[in-house]
Image (tube, rainbow, N blue to C red; front, side):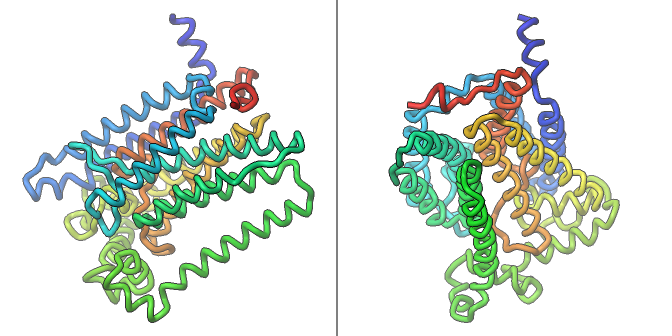
Length: 399
């Protein structure tokens, strides 16, 4: 028994786990710091969110360890993905039509004391689905066979249900995951001309994204802002101080928090903005509170740790000897990078607020479990690489 444990720990990717664990611990501390004062104001247990976050972290770590040692045949399986698609579609449908809106979106399913956000789980599902589908297509391409359009329809249904909630941030992250994985699938065995086309396509998407950010500036769109919460977020992005008493309140107080923190911060627990001024201080804007209390240095440490994890995930994908594992790692890396980019961009006013959390630090069970599961699967690939026993799971388990 001990020999097996030592064997597993020998190939365990500590370079992924250590920064992950540090971020989780910092997250628990900052969730308590950001939420306790407001909970005490309303007569609730000031440690309730911290306790919940600690439980999410423990469950997430257990899930990560399990997936790091499972055989990949459990998720590299067409039947598993078909069942997963049905569950995802039904969950997103229920969230949209049978739940109450929160901040203008029907994105959460309440199950007793906990709430589930299906669009978070959709990110991991799309990574698994695209890795399997594109590996299958590559295999068929090598044998001179074509492929159907069913996967496109499945992905369109998932993306359509997410934007229908509406969850703009979740939609953009899922869309980015799918695009990067698709371009990765197209790239390896294609001609130089096709690679240029791929790069042009990616640049085109970035330009389109920038143009889309300008659309809400149009007057007739602005006139609709009183009816649509998502448009109000763009209004706050363009004119935060003009609407500082209403839709611009979050961004303005985020600016104040970052300004208050300076280089070294006010000290842990000493944030001013979290005391009823900054909405969602323990979820979307936890980085603002962290910067105010721990300063630029504290925020930089968090970002560097997260960037290290992302680069490590991409590196494992680059080292992979098969397309499925490479696609999966690139999907997970894109997931973490785009989510971090959207959160940091919203906090400092470079992007509109889309309700995206800061990975591993913000309060939230769905996000923590999905990120931990994804990291565990990447660790599984990493362990096989260290054993020099990496195999193409698609070749063994494709149906």
